[in-house]
Image (cartoon, rainbow, N blue to C red; front, top):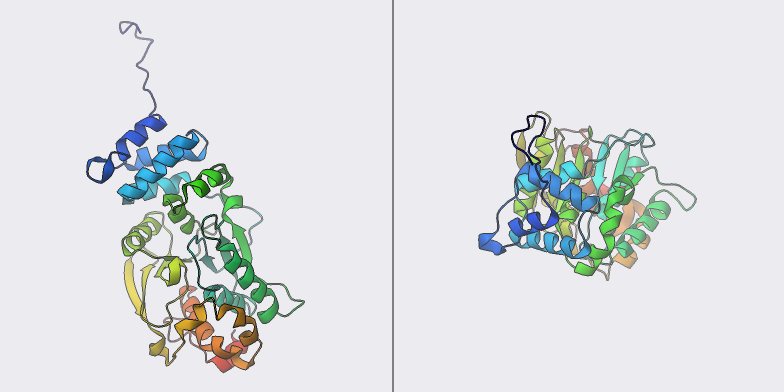
Length: 329
């Protein structure tokens, strides 16, 4: 280039996939973090097919070893921005079940959400592809209970189900390589933060405390509200045998932590209902008065979801006894 020519300007070369991999892929001690703009550019390139399969695997593996920083998570969510789809009707609460962890049973939070939705509380559910864990069995099984045990054999669930692949079609390009890698990557974390009803509070679950903190900060920075549950197997299901930690992102940007325990509501739900051995019995229990052994479990989750939706000012206030669940408003 002739630098004396005023009509010519220096050409700035955009970073290539190799440039991003070199920066984050030098091991736990030598790797460097991506800034927000770099992360947004890198993930946008990844999602648009700009990485080869080998580069995609190397990049996701490097970030798994290094761990995603706050700026990298924010850049990822900027790249995964979900436009509001005109076919999506308004809801009052969003339950994000984007989970790819092995499950011991079904989703108590999904059953409780359906129970509330059937009685007038509009709830949207975000679901992702459990490509690694075979978690689809739990999803299908629990959805079968939603449509038969609670609503009735000929009923139809009033929940609005939004699939992550439909919301972010570019993720389909990476499905095979993610499955071949065989580990959960930062893309799984990003899927948990997806909310097509961005002006409504989201409830999601995560297994790692440090990521819960970063996810709460990401919601705050995006002007969103929600509850992040340090929950059962990385889902929004509350623990049934101990206290559950929950990060709250409130309107105005305040972040605080609350703790809930079934004993606070006078309940003694058994953690055994999450076992694979008990899950086949869920349908029988749901058919009993007060939903049988699942009654206390659903009461606990109903109380929390009512609180998350802003219907009540505390989890305790949202509690209804097992015998009254059928009359939840």
